[in-house]
Image (cartoon, rainbow over all chains, first blue to last red; front, side):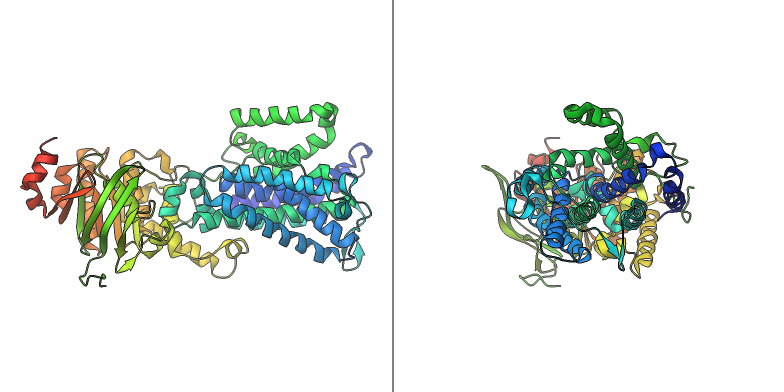
Length: 327
Length: 259
């Protein structure tokens, strides 16, 4: 990680650590801890999506489906087959990886937005399976009585415990992503985004890298889905449809596609907005999201982080390392 | 290294044909490029020069025929595999990663000469930091070699066209090619820049890299080339030294005479 990122990371950790102690005592906002647990869970999805969409330039409309695969896999394995959640979560991740690989191989060999189309269809299929496969998934009425999580025999039964677990995982994931983007792999992903043919001619195995980043984004979404499942302890297929894939995409775009900090910012912001205020629009919520998407794409293509002065915030295009400095 | 036919060429084109629908862009090119030279490929627009470069670098798969690089067949490899074997190129229309810095563009060229994958980089496994530092240092050397050292931290898209063309060469050099293909390197350059480009090309050749270039600037071609291949409507019209080509009646008629 770069120096500026490290400083922001330290600040973020402090804010996150203090947050529950600040809002918990205030009755009116004490449920913000709960909202932040969801924001953390969604951040796992959107960090993966940021690598895939913001850096590699590949659009996936199936992130909610991978989220659902993780949720239902760990839901079914724990509540029906008696697995331990800590074994079920990797099983869901493995399944999501295998499925992403199968969907991605044909779609990512081609240049252009074939992944968007393939994942659109795939997302719909997954949603139908979750809603119709009544025997295993409970169909439209979903599943209940899913066990919560335990760490070394200690049951996570408070929102604060969940909050720290989830955001701990988010921060580790964030550091992983930072290391990737400031490496040869990150440069290759951005190169694919900008000039795929030139990247390939310079020796970047573009199809393989696109497939790998797609699989990683699916694994992160699946792990997030498993956490979601064990946190809310009940499931219904409505949380895993195209609408949710659009929401994840919007979270990444609002904050800033090609910025991991922007992705976190957008995710927290939209989770709060969605939870606290947007429900007044009821069935018109989709219209609000659609309009927001349009506004961001037209007027703020680099997201909210592009509004923050460069001095305070490193963006990917201009950074000077302390060693070679500007002349 | 010996090619199948026993001589010491670095690149051998064996009856390379390329059809686009009903149009034959290359009609069975047979040619051998000896190592260590500057090989120019000239011909009027539509002669098939860029198509030939695309075939050599794997961006197009020849309809028929075979291409050998240092005796090994390469026409069935993907472009990134060919790059890894030691062929690199620049593009007729500059294809830099414009939002990345000048230095990052060259660092991308180190991709086939480094190895860490997703997990190794994400988890910062041992050796990561050293590899990244190596990539950076080697890339700065290439930038210094072409004379862009001072522009390392600028966005590539912010450079003037002349420097962008040179940056593309630096990025290609960073892959450590044994054969470097330049597609119209002087296109859009002024006279002074073209002169400097000529010097740079000779310096690259002197370091042991074989170069092929497609170029329309005849002064530059005659100046720096050791051998010239003239294409005309997808066929070989003539081959030889600059002097031989200059006096070749068919070349004068078909190409130089027109312009």
